Image: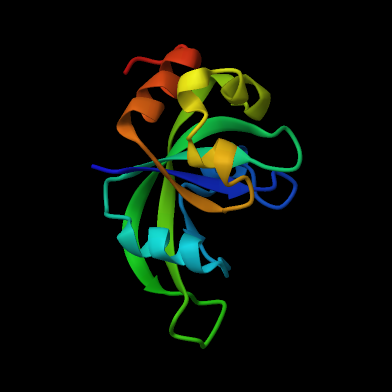
Length: 137
């Protein structure tokens, strides 16, 4: 299993909306590095759900339920989407400021590559963020 982080502005699409919808297509990504990450996602992988611009925090976990397919928002076959479902809302949201305070997370993509909308998360980063949120690892 691999771990990821996906970003959304909560006023456009929040984790609570994902819970209501039960699943959604993660589409509209137009960054080459993010596209490579979408293509690498496998069914069953988990992704932190990060609220950007407002809140700026990891708020929940989503599960990849359908692997990469043609992005339905474009006819350009280079762009892909995945389908995600809610997995767990975190007991405690973890802000970007909190992550930046942890020396062992200084190389985390979220800290280093702030604008990348779909990111990899290393297993040790995943476990540390879960501990910070009061979740079982």
